[in-house]
Length: 287
Image (cartoon, rainbow, N blue to C red):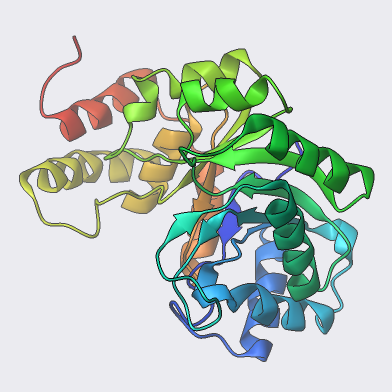
């Protein structure tokens, strides 16, 4: 397995969230590794183009050997920020920009290579051949090991796959956002040996108080004692049971929640319990 079963998402480590100090970042990196979370997910835009550099400064003083971790970054979104001269949020997938963006992420992360570079979101103007040329050059120079996409539909992935090998698609996937099970996205990934990663794996269960989330909490509550777990562990176990081998990207910086999340990988939901949770989400039996 190229990446840890659960992946540490860094979007809220910096100014977009917890604003961790360097010492706190170093401590959290070590803690994640101790919990067998060795893959760290970044994007150039996080923190308005600042979080990668904050992480890199911490990594350079952490004493962690580069081959013990895997670093992911994403590029392509041109974000309106004080750190860029963009006048509108848009996407740029020109060959030169992809190469420049990867080089910039490497500089910020204080590393010589990325284990995985993802295109952050599909652009209606992307040209597969230009993207393929950029990826080929980055791989030839040893700056990236693997290439993938994020938030791409099956048809968008297939379009790009005609020109370049795609190893990962990072999508939004959770109990409350599981359309990828029905629109062919996960089927396509399984058929083409593409590794799925899921951002926001807990969905809206703890963010919203709706009829749906109340049904979900009720059903999860009925299973807590049976499995001796927490609700968030059940939500992750529900994802992990899918045969496509989804890697959840967890965004928490709280150590207890990280430790709890890791234990979810040891939960084997019984078949009927998996469907009970799905039915609670949908509000009706499966067809």
